[in-house]
Length: 99
Image 1 (tube, rainbow, N blue to C red):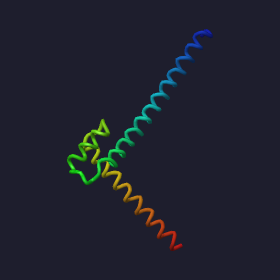
Image 2: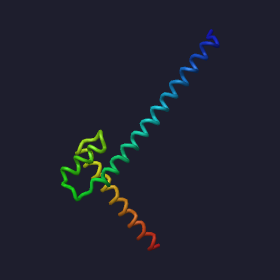
Image 3: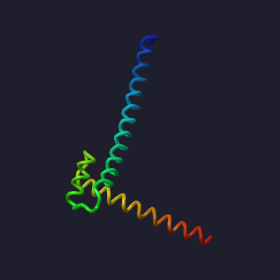
Image 4: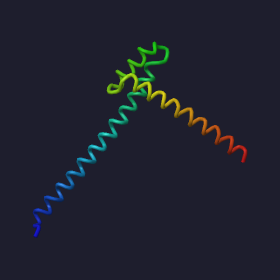
């Protein structure tokens, strides 16, 4: 038979484990958004008027934990995403106006 003390210890450990998991999730989300904002700020600071090699090197240093190639790939992905989004908005506005 399990005693009250054992049940209380199990509940405390279970609660502690869940609390640690929540803290880890919150920190992960915080780091994700921090990384996102560092990349966007670096793009604003280091404009396309710079030499390409110097620009992407500076952006990767500003972001911190990403390589130059990772920053370039992220930029290309975001650029394509924005183009597709604008095309979809344009097509949907034409469809809605023709109704």
